[in-house]
Image (cartoon, rainbow, N blue to C red):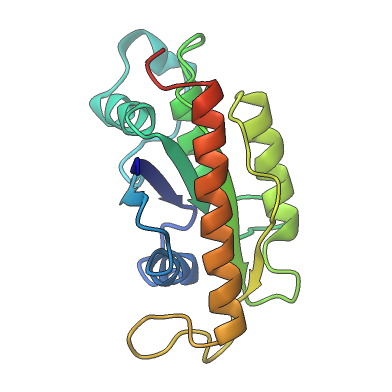
Amino acid sequence: MKTYKVGYLIGSLATESINRKLADAMFKLAPEQLSFHEISFKDLPLYSYDYDADYPEAGRRFKKAIEDSDAVLIVTPEYNRSIPGALKNAIDWASRPWGTNSFANIPSGVIGTSPGAIGTAVGQQHLRSILGFLNSPQMNSPEAYIQFRDGMLNEAGEIADESTAKFLGNYLDEFHQFVARVLTVLPRGA
């Protein structure tokens, strides 16, 4: 079976981000056809179109990492009912200069966790709007708004709750099927 290279972005820059912990635990549940690699954006300066004529190396590396991925999964917290500013900045870098949008035709998924009862629902909807504008085909179902609670992860960094583990495993199975469908219609490099 074909293996898909999935670049993932962690929306928070915090070292101890609960979204990073969720991603690490969740990837242990992924089908073997998904190979995950982090696409870091912590070295990107604040975007300005002044950079468009001479894109810095950090911006070129970031864009290339997205373009070299078969799909992108964004695991993000919600900040003030939106996405973190650093994540929005990274997305702006990837979409510029005009006509070189790295997200175009790259299948994407969005998931996140928060201590709040509705998880990251509002922030994810904002992110989906941005990805839609960037012409990134999105997995719209199932949606995953995970409430991060004490005991959600065990000492080994695995999902401790059986029903949550089953849900996240199903989410990744669905993501795999979604990526395969999209890339059948929009093959990479075609």
